[in-house]
Image (cartoon, rainbow, N blue to C red; front, side, top):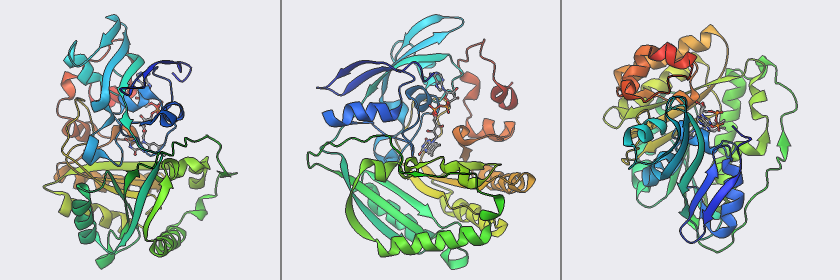
Length: 374
Ligand SMILES: Cc1cc2nc3c(=O)[nH]c(=O)nc-3n(C[C@H](O)[C@H](O)[C@H](O)COP(=O)(O)OP(=O)(O)OC[C@H]3O[C@@H](n4cnc5c(N)ncnc54)[C@H](O)[C@@H]3O)c2cc1C
C-alpha cells in the first residue's frame, strides 16, 4: 500500500489531515512539524503507514494522556469486496468503523484516512532520565508521573534478578514550547552491515550490554532537551537494526495485563525471562491509561504492557513464550497481534472477547484469522 502515498488536504488552522493510507508517519511529520502539528500518538518507529497504524490501532508513550491512534481518526476511506468504496465515520457506520480500528486489515482495504493532529509549540521535548532499582520503584514513578508528564516509558534490564528484578531506566517527557520547529530527514547515520552470528547474542553478552546501558544512563540521569526523533524513534537511527539478531531474526512478545493483576503478573513474567537466560536488550514496560479505543480488537487497555525481544532460537524460544502465555492467561491479560506470529486460538479469543463481531470483508483470505477464529 506504500504506493498510495499522496497527501489530500491539511487544515493548518485546525490540524486536520487527510492522506492516502500508504503515507508514512515519517512523511506526515516532515509536512506537519514545521506547521506546528504532530501525530496524536506515535509508535516507536516512524516507518509505518497510516493504514498500518490504524489496522493495529497503535499506541505510544502518551497512551495515558491521549489513548491509541484510532481515537484520533475522523474518517476512513474503505474499499470492500461486498460494499464497494465507502467513507466510514464513527457516525455513519459505528460497527464498521470500530471493526476497522485495530481490525488487522481484515475489514477491507483502507484507501485514505482523515486524522486529527496535535498542536506542538516546538519540536523538542524536555526529557528526564531516572534510573530505578526495582519494580516497586517503577510503579511509584509511573503513578507519580502520569499527571505531570505527557510521555512515560521504561527500559527494563531483563537480566536483573532477585531484589533487582525489573530495574531499569524510566523516561518521562513534556514538549518544550520554544517555537523551534525543526523536522527531520530520514538519513540513517549508523548501519548494521551484516547479520550477526547467533553466538553474539547470548546470556553473557546481553547481560553485559544491559549492565553497560544501565550504567551509561545512571551517569546521564537528569533532564535535558531532545529532538523528537531521539526521544520517540531511537531505533530508526540504526539502519537494519534487526540484523543484530542474526539470520533467524527476533520474535517479540508484547502483552498487557490489567491493573488489578499487574503487580503479580509483571514480576512473574520477568522471572520466567531471567530464568530462561533468553533475555534481550530491548525490554519495555509502560502503563496504559483509562482512555478506551473505539476498536473492537484494540490491544491497549488499562494496565501495564511489557514488550520483550527474543533472538529466535526455535523451540526453546517458543517454549519460553508458552510459559509466558500461561501467566498471561491466568492474569486475564492480552497479547498484541501486531507483534505476534504464534498466538493460540484460546489466547486470542480470551484477549479479544468481541472478536465475533468483526465486520470482516468476506473476500479477504487470512491465515491468521483461520488460525484464531474460523
Ligand atoms: C521498531 C518498531 C517499534 C514499534 N513500536 C510500536 C509501538 O510503540 N506501539 C505500537 O502500537 N506498535 C509498535 N510497532 C508495531 C507497528 O507500529 C505496527 O505493526 C504497524 O501496524 C506497522 O504498520 P505498517 O504500515 O508497517 O503495516 P504492515 O506491517 O505492512 O501491516 C500491519 C497490518 O496493517 C494492515 N494494513 C496495512 N496497511 C493497510 C491498509 N491500507 N488497509 C488495510 N489494512 C492495512 C496489514 O494487513 C497488517 O494487518 C513497532 C514496530 C517496530 C518495527
